[in-house]
Length: 206
Image (cartoon, rainbow, N blue to C red; front, side, top):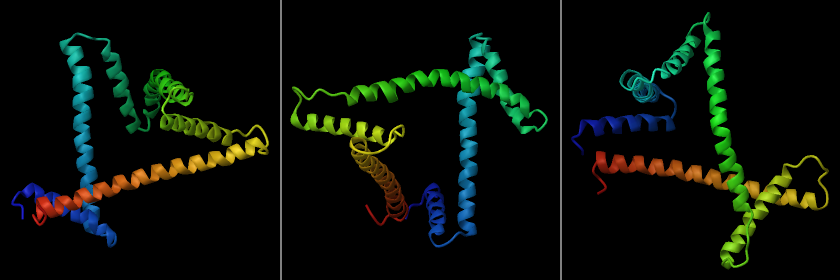
């Protein structure tokens, strides 16, 4: 078994979390609260160092970028939400943040989520290998039929009915693939924990 105290602490906390498989108990709640508290403290320090120190203190006091003081004031106004009397003050920095972030994100999302996907959907099978041409056709068919499923301005009959039914199949395949990917991700985390317990802690598996 490992003589490292850090590995012992990690192993015991892992077993404490696994104890929830039996039923909820004080040991599990202690591990849960400890994880939340440690994570909150860690990210608080990280965000303070990366945001307040690197992006406010250093530019203002070292690089003389005094315009950033306005950003610091807006950030400080966020904390007025902790007071019921001054909570209304926080609405101004929130409104500014939402508007600025929307103006920054919307063009990039249109480029990535709309234009690039539309470009990938439009295909030219001439001159392409057979497998690539078939794959491009399936992507095109999936996009068109899925969009037709969400077209509610006309009665679903005839070609629109058939197209919407095919779109449902593509939607279910997409949901199934996403769910399977998430399940496999959780299983890989579980396998990693078991490998840690059996290899690093107990030394049974080498």
